[in-house]
View 1 (tube, rainbow, N blue to C red):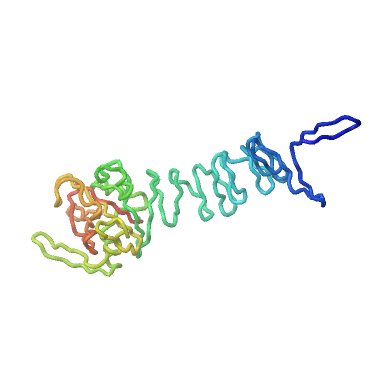
View 2: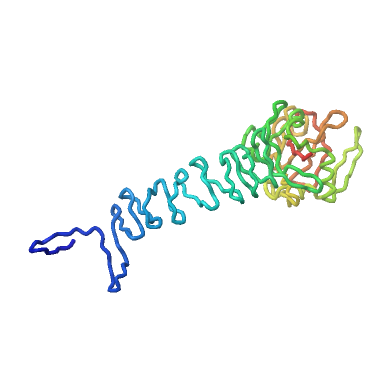
Length: 324
């Protein structure tokens, strides 16, 4: 506040801004208040007596709905700021990355990866070089090439219209982690288009790749053959197996001990869910007598894979799909 005299009258001047000036006439600051908070009126402004914002090339704007980008005043995307050089605003709500060549797209249904615009898998993005989208239920699965084959690197978690499936202990979180357990009818219909249920020859290739040897023992009915070696160790995931019975996951196959379900007591151990955390069992296509051979030898106690067990079609085992 200052007093000035003009023609004998004293004038009262109320000062709302105080500028400090050196002898050189260079202004160091010009301070005002926004509410109770001081700000530099040369470079900043007060919006709605509550928000202090930087001016945009000397201009004021509505910081609740706008922002300053490279001296341009731009509308926010909903309530978000974004980089106009690499991003865009879709439908005034979604900030998305432009494709490498600057293209925009429908960010609610699509995404861009390596300059390729793809449909989302439900609401999820995925990498087509390492993952597939099962468009039947919008689940995303990892896949990996092992030798000459391309395998899903996760157990399937799809509910076909025919056949029976289970989540271990009827807990849906086990389906998410380990995949579903399928009976024979469901297993034969489970894999998505372009993929098939893993066959005995596919598992044999895994054994040979691991340097395993086939060992057969004569029984009263038929020879029982097992592969001996380290296929189990090399195929099992690095974590998740009981008592540190984990593998090296050398090929990215990431086998997990999802257990199995026996509704009739056909296998040893009685009726019910068995083996989670300790063992895994996978369906293999039908043999000549209509039975299903099961690759069931991945166990926390062993590095072998026993792929000569049999089921009667009612049991619940995991499914791994192989690309056609």
